[in-house]
Length: 316
Image 1 (spheres, rainbow, N blue to C red):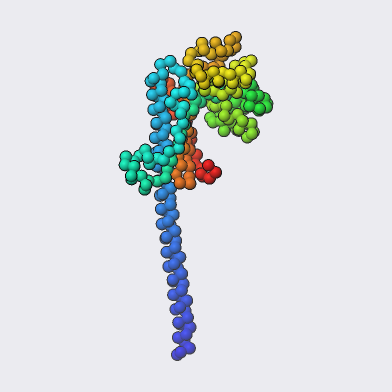
Image 2 (spheres, rainbow, N blue to C red):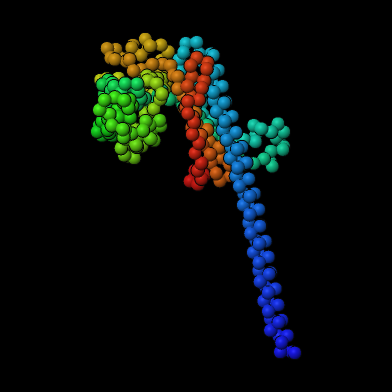
């Protein structure tokens, strides 16, 4: 009788251990799933709050541009205006809390941003007519000069022109193949046309892709861009124009012709219709950046495009 109880007790002990292991496994699984659900909910709430804050920052930028248009009867845009002053990084809770004594428990969120003139850069959309695919020799020459000014091979300009022509030529045009490249909408997408990363990095601060042909604002453009759009103007003379505008911005077209006598200044102007807005929200160890392109027509400001970028805050 004693010999039969020993195997039974061993089997019961083994069964109990199996049950305990199963219960522990199920408990761990339930705890993990609950933790995962909390993490997902927290991330989603943080994403929604960040998107809401950056959307508010974009509305703030649009308001500044509208107010600038209201008080700008002369229709002149330059770097001395309020829109050109960047917003330094500031703790967000200081703006949201009326009682500053109650901001200690607020999340550590910091917001910064800037508005820049998109027409301070050369618009590569000028090179090819988007409707017909016809190339503009004058703008091609400007693009080649810009490449030379930023130490990029002129073959890059030719590659860019050929790629844009293939992308913007209507598909029903005789002799056009069906494998034409996609139309780039951002400067980074010019790599689709075969532009190497190093050349694109040098060109990126000086070029932009806009939906309509535009001229360059002499009050905001770099010396490389100014020298590119004005034939027979070197970078040194363009630097002289920048020093002049720092003292006195160009306020009418006659001011430009007075400084650049006997030169073709048709590619230069003093008014801007496109602005780039950058917003940066730093929340703990995460950073959410938003880049938006705004178009201003009179006092009407519309968002042309917007993109958000998530990144770690390491190295900043």
